[in-house]
Length: 130
Image (cartoon, rainbow, N blue to C red; front, side, top):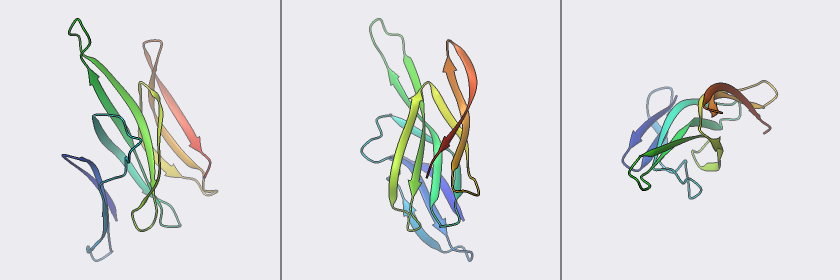
């Protein structure tokens, strides 16, 4: 099983064996490219090769003058290898979130979420070519 959690330094993903023993733990899925203040995990899936895909959204809050908070969210997807090492991390355009991920039979990664376009929330589906 692959599970996710949150601690003070960001999202934590870990894998357990079928008997419940900890196989690995990874708390650096974001890496140096992540620029958000907080990250929330939404979904996790493992492909047939044992790679793990983690999706969610990062949030940034800014307080420009006059003091009116500006909150932005940006969806993300990360890929971990079978040992839990981060292979890559991608953010999608601003004002978005990714809520679900699956791996199709041909290996294509499909995600679903939403984005804000012209002050309207719209559904987005993104396909990532492996």
